[in-house]
Image (cartoon, rainbow, N blue to C red; front, side, top):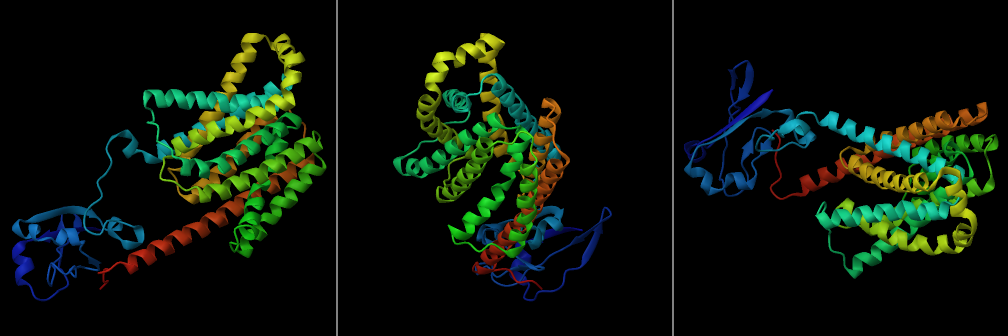
Length: 418
């Protein structure tokens, strides 16, 4: 049903009582002519269950007739978060006409880049098993990309001060540690197994929230994590590529990214996500260089580079390193842009499906043999992550709605529903 608001200076000044407005039929649509009562200056004007915004009640509006075009009633509903006094302006252009298609394209690009990164990354480790150095390359290519983007003003570089730098350093250190240990695991075991272990990350997040941040975690969330722990345990016991280096490195990565989330909450900033990620990448690169030089430097200089060039050639070796770094940066950037476009529930489902895509494609491309128990365990773990993500997203949405309702009801001159 659509609604129409007619406002005239004569109506505002002469009417002394509020009456239920009559309905009109215009062009097959039902309209409501709304009348108001009371002083315009006190913000107490009622529009059939809603209140006029103070700016719409200014004396300037008394001098002329104002006609608000029909707008969908659903868009004006408080439950839907619609505008209380006017119509929503429909966005123009292709992106505005087909938002679902655009969001779907973002998800496809995110998954595609992530899958390509994981496959290319593992192929490099098959002939160049130096994860510390490769981790540095990932970050280095991304930093060069960010610097070039800043140079041309896409995006414009946001200034950073010492206070913000102090907040971002712990985030970047955890990001660097999690990134390096993830790559150590990728180099040591199958990609599918590493991603199965990393499915435990929600468990570490919940534990950190409960025991470090002191937040109360609902019992339903803890119960939803049980399948994740059971599934990962089943997959680990019979994983053909299992070794302790890969397993422990993936677990350290989970812990590192958990602390990254904790420090990220303390480092909330108004800076856009693209600039924040660029600064984090720069700091993380500085953190990763010394361990790479200490741990792998002598071996690389002695035979590491020569062996890789002898196996695949210099051109392919350099191009592989460049493209794996580019795919790493782009998939992280597109992931950030994608998640900014969707609700928490869609975000949760998207993350789970991404892991399913990576595990599935890695098994197909590399022909990894998995036992029946490993396959069942992986499926149980992914299902548990999906259940946990859905429950958590619903809890966050309920908190958001409750918070908005409290803010709305606490505003002076709040609307009165008839």
